[in-house]
Structure formats: C-alpha cells, structure tokens
Image (cartoon, rainbow, N blue to C red; front, side):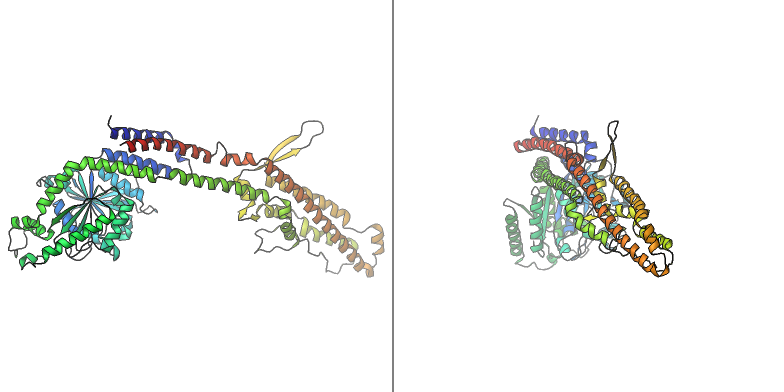
Length: 618
C-alpha cells in the first residue's frame, strides 16, 4: 500500500469515527466546530481522488484577463471592454454537455447570508465531489449568450445578487474537442475573479464577493500582467496575503505584450526593452513573496484574439501570422503539456500540503478547551453568586433598607410589599372606640398583612439582581429543590423536595397568618383603657394609645420577619453549600456535556496525531 493510500485510509477512519459519534456531536455545544473538522477532512480525502484541476487567473484592469480566459476556453465566457473591470462576480468555467450558464443561488426565503459553507458545497458539487446540494441552494440554468454573461457578471443591480453563491459556465465538450491543446478537455477548470485594481477602486466584486475564498481551492494561479499594467502595489499586497493564507498554490507569470494593435504602425524600438524590464520587475516581486523558480510566459493576447476572430477587415496581417506572432498557440500547448505531465502529482502534493496545513493550524482542541474552561468557571461563579445571594451577612443591609423604605421603581425591579417606616394613622373623626380599633386594624392589614404582601415579598426575594444575575434564574438553571423536613414524634422524619419558591411562600404565609392573630390581640384597648377613653373628649387619647400599640406591633413584626428571613437564608445557604457538588455535577461533572466534549476532543486529537505522522512520513 503506497503512502497516499495509507493517508486516505486514516482519513476514512476519522470519517467513520465522526459517523459513529454523530448523535453525540449533534448534541454538543460545539457541534458546528466539530462538524467543520469532519467536512474539511472529508473534502480533502475526496480531493485526493478527484482529477479536477483548478487554475485561477489573477490580474488587474488592462491586463487582458477576460481575453486570456476566452482564448483558453475557445469560447466567449467573459465580457471584455477596454479599461473597464468587467468581471464583478467569481466564475468557474468548465467543460460540459452543452454551452450553459449555471447559477447557484441561496433561496430567497432564507434569512441567512451566503457563507463559506455554502460556497464550499457548490464548489464540491461543480468538481463532482458531491452529487447533490442541500435544499436552500437552488440551481438556475440559462443559455450561454453574450448578453446574459454580461448581465450576470457585470450588473450590480441583479435582483437578489447577494444570494448568488457562484456562477458556473460550461462549454460544450464537443466544441472543445476541435482544439487539441484546450485545457478544459483535461478536467481542468478556470476560475475568473474580479480584477485586483477593480477591488481597490470599489468597482469589482458585488457585495464583497471578490472570489478570494475560491483561491483556497486552486492548484495553479496564473498571475497576469501587461505592458501597460504591470504588477502594482495592490496586486503585490494581495499576493502576499494570499501566500500567507495558502502556501500550497503553484504560480505562473504570464506577460501580455499589450499594444492595442500597434503592429499596424511602426513598432517602437523600445517595446522589447519595456517588456523585458516589466517581466524582470514582476519576477523580483514574486521572489520576495516566495523564494523559488517561477515559470514565465509571454503572449500577445490582442493579436491572438484578432487571429482567432478574423473579423477585423482592416487587419493587414493574416490569421496564421497573427497567431504565430501572438505566441498563444505555443503558450497553450506548453501549459497543456506541463500540466498533463505534472497534474496528478501536483494535485496530490497540494492535497497533502493542504492536509498538513489543516492539521498544523487546527487548534480546535485548545480553542474549545479554553472555552470549556471558561464555561466551567462561569458555572462555578454563577453558583457562588447564588450562594452569596443567601448569605445573610452580605445581603441583610439591602433587604432591611428595601423593607423599610417605599418602593423605588428605578432602583428596585420588584416591590417587596412592605414599608415599615410608614406611620399608620387615622385622620377621620371617629367617636367610638370600637370603630377606631377596627380602622387601625384595617390600615395595618392593608399595608402589611394582605395576602398580596406574601406574593410581593417572595417575588422580591427571588427577583433580586446580584452581580447581573437574577436569583430566580440561577435557581432554575441549577434545578435546585429544597429539602423540607417534617418532624414526626412517632415515626421517621418525612423529607420532601419542594421548590424554594413554594418553601418561601409557605413560610411567609405562616408568618402573616400568625401576625394576623397577634394583631387582633394587640391592636385593641383593655377594659380599663376602654373605660378610661370612653368619653368623647378622650378619643384623641385613645387614638394616640392605638398609634403607639400599632408602632410597637409593626416594630416587633419587622424584627420577627428579619429573624425569619435570616433563618430561611441560613438554611438555604447551608443547603446550597452542602449540595454544591451535586448541583454542579450535571454541568461540570464526569457525566456533564463539558466532560463528554473533552473526552471527544481527546479522541479526535488521537486520530489527528496518527494522521499527522502519516503525512510527515509522506
């Protein structure tokens, strides 16, 4: 078994592992990242078996990029207009059963924008790596006519242009068979992207769709410059960025001796010198990007185009002479033979290099582990906040203040229902003691003992915001139940797990019921007092006495409520402290999703380490 087959075998093993863990991965909080690893490795494995070879043509305005693509495809597949950036959308040109424009578009009903996953799916489909596309991506076929090509590639106002993922132009393979050295016959596809000068001047690349992402899949990049448009600063910067991102591309420099039909007049004696200097400078720039030997070809695309078309009657040179002087046919044959000899080896080398880059740069485990550690700490921190919210020494000052003062909507999200600093008084003229006593009781009940006060207090305690966390949300998140122990004299104690809200409501309800009974006993006048204040002139004295009793009753009620809350908080804090490991187990314990993800990551890493060794051996 050769080394490539061993690498493919390891890739298949990884794919089988991912398939076996499909359910576990889909339920993981990092399913997107893990599935991307699976898709990227599967794509590389399929690329190794694929014989399709991608050639991109990179150049600025006035380099003749569209002309070169049309000549290499022996078909007008790209619009040409002098001095204007004509390609504004990336295009893949390939051979097919017929001349056709295939538009890959995301469904208009989809709210999601086109992303790299959509693009890779379409490229895989065009290259034959996959035989189907997901539902959101639809295929639209149109006739290959110049008007349609121009509209699709150059029209900024195409409806839903932001939904267009990619355009594939296919050229009838029967037509291509007439040309022995036509590259499209040899499972080669051309990538036509917006010109770099166009990008810099914001006229290239509709919706920022400049096709840069396509170049990651390229086997060979033809860097095109011309006499009037040599490699400039924009292209230099672009190539450096491209090389940083993708070091596995082979490059070829093509110099277009562009002269705008100067051969009809006297050729300038300096023309050859200008071309030589332009090529020399371009090679120097390329060597700075990567130290290696670059293949350089010269061709006159204008003469080649006129030679093939033979439509300009003013031309004084015949077709054969034009083609010979253009050097195009020799150029095409050289590229064809060079690719034919090295295509498979070059393609596999790139695939292996891509695989090596993927493994080297793929720090998925460390990135996810960092996130998992952050998540663990977040769970611990949230649980600490929950415990602190029931640490009476830390919260009593605020709770006492809120119970004493009237509700401040701006500072306090929920009304606690109490206002112990409120003075209870009766302002009506009342001459009978029994009516006066009844009025005081009603006032106390309305302000402190109505059933709504119980609900208000419990909601206030649960809706408190501690360090930007709501107490109730934390209780729900950690699924906390409170152990309510019912003491029995003649049998075993009964332990019930109830919600903390229910526990609180019951306790506060018991407290208010008790205070209602106490109010009936304490907010009254004794026989002696009633007798003493029975005369009309003594009603004010009776009112003053009842006000004093009311103040004492509410003061005692406040103190008893705080004692009750302290007891509840202490019990609950003790419960949270004792059960911390139990409640955190689900989130950060041995059977938690975090732990399962860590185990899964280690398994994936083991597979990748085995694969890495095979790649290094290769």
